[in-house]
Image (cartoon, rainbow, N blue to C red; front, side):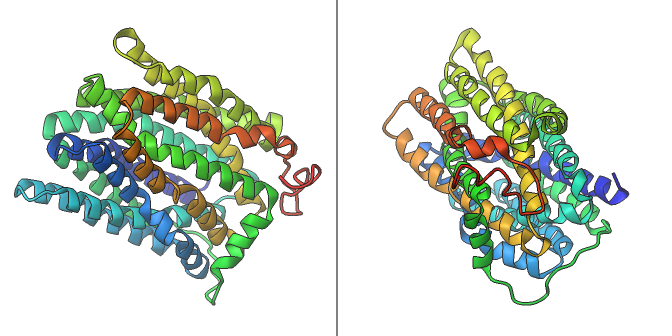
Length: 408
């Protein structure tokens, strides 16, 4: 890989690490410092992803019209500045849930622009045939962040308090911005007027991308419930400490790292479609295993189960991610990614609100079962649609095999 790609990956590593520190610290600020309940945690989770719902589609237009590197740098700086307001307010005793919600919204808007630009920027610095390896490398970085970020975040919360732990994420975003500013890449933005509907039409008109959007939307809706049930069950119900909570979440990174390392080989051996289908099948027993998490020895089922879930989930993500980057025309790539991000991540805040409401009427353990069974159901379409197993990357836009069975 080129020096530009290495710098790009290093920047992503810092950003991902800080993000996973905050994913531990921010809910714990609400839960331990401000005494938030299930509904308040659900609203916070919704605020953390509302940017994709509000700005996911416009972000694609900006990314296709303008150079992507300045968008990445600006988004990092915006997120760093907003996060720094949390420890400052805490030091003066002025921190409120309203401020947490506001910061979460600002960060989510920055993340919406960053993620669309980040995905669309990758083909500018690696060749098409290297996309599976490039995506695998990014997933390896993300898995390392999951492995070390939550544990470090939990330790920071326990030693320095939750608001101060957020500083680590702000610093990581600034380092990412500095590194990305020095990446050299050949970009070809349109510079003219582009239609946001063109990206949606491309996604909905493509049988496999349409399916990817459907599965992603269902999966992220359930993830909105996971944002709530995880701290409530492990910390509130089972009494796991902040450091232990971070370490338990980190367990998922072990499986994710292995999945990222295996994904390019598995895709090369079985193809994108069979990899996606096989990973979806393996999700079923693994989420049921997680659902049996409980006190005593059953506590270990959560980190072990989630490590295995992430192993197959990362292979699925590399397969579908490299597939869509390879088949999409350059001029549409930003809006294609934005449309899918809008469909997928836009459903997460809705899941957070529904999860918060459910948390008020069912037990936390029942909410855990709802999350696990919902995750199983979300991946069913990849198994039920035969066209997925026949996927190939071709010059016809990746439709080979996808339309042999009619519409996916």
